[in-house]
Amino acid sequence: MVTDGQWFFHMKFVDEAKIRVEAGNGGNGALSFRREKFVPRGGPDGGDGGRGGSIHLAASGGLNTLADFRYSTQFRAQHGGRGQSRNCSGRAGDDLIIPVPLGTLVRDADTGEIIGDITREGERLLVAKGGRGGLGNTHFKSSTNRAPRHIVPGTPGEQRELLLELQLLADVGLLGMPNAGKSTFLRAVSEARPKVADYPFTTLHPQLGVVRVENHRSFVVADIPGLIEGAAEGAGLGIQFLRHLSRTRVLLHLVDMAPADPHADPVRGVRTLAAELRKFSPALARRERWLVLNKMDLIPPEEREKRVAEMVRALRWKRPVFAISAATGAGCKELTRELMVRLERAGAKRGARAPGSIAHA
Image 1 (cartoon, rainbow, N blue to C red):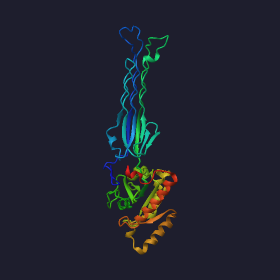
Image 2: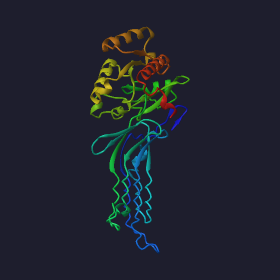
Image 3: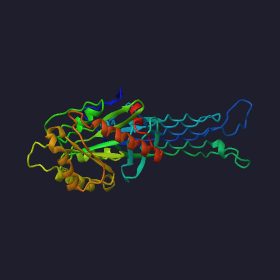
Image 4: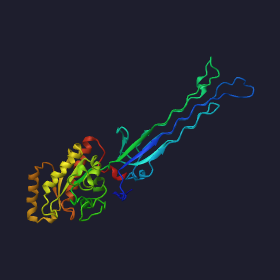
């Protein structure tokens, strides 16, 4: 559900589902002969069977989880009708249209093959084709076979099991350790209102927010649960949601510059998270990543510039760096403006989806 550029997620966010789809069988052709008064040799008049209904997945902007598939996992399309006498064809089976959220990746459960990727509003993906209708005996009449008793049965519809995987459509992804301030940043720059608290793993589900820089200029930001060391082996919550960053163009790596633990080392935290990212997906690790040093308001003003310089030097960071305070909003506008410019340039260069296009889905 999208209202005023804000995305809301159900408490039970579901981003994976397994379903079985069975297209309709084609109807059999008919074996029939004309039987009319004063027509002693009427000949064959068996009609063809109707085609079976196919199954399509259709993108729906009104959905944002795969929760509906937790209980409804079997989908069957209508069978085609059998042929009739008087050369009447059987009724075609109705196609079955299954709505899914934008960003749904569809795989064959048995082979792992990617069947399709649903990313545009109204897009349809054929996942199970209905069977062909059979042929009636009319097709087999000839000068030497005036009373054929041969028909062709309809073919069965396709059946398969599908894995549905939701990957959120966002231009910018937020990355960081727990309590780095990602949710606070999302609240500061967008209309989204994720839960914010002082304890780890405040974010339990992915959150989306639309950042409006000015009229007709906006982009979408995705926040996922924070990562911790060992995430690639299953520790913590965030690793299972990293797939939602796979479509983003830019990653913002938020760093807590004033951690509550005096022994915590922000430099080590950045390196740890980068290592976990490489373990999960080398392609995602190569994505353009900006360093965002957060909670600068908790550092004495006279020390801020020095702390930033030390951080950049220790990491040998060559990409953009921003020092902000998500809590007070300091530096956030400058960061979002730079992001907007970067995304617009990328969109113009690739001819790709314009930033913020999802906001009005």
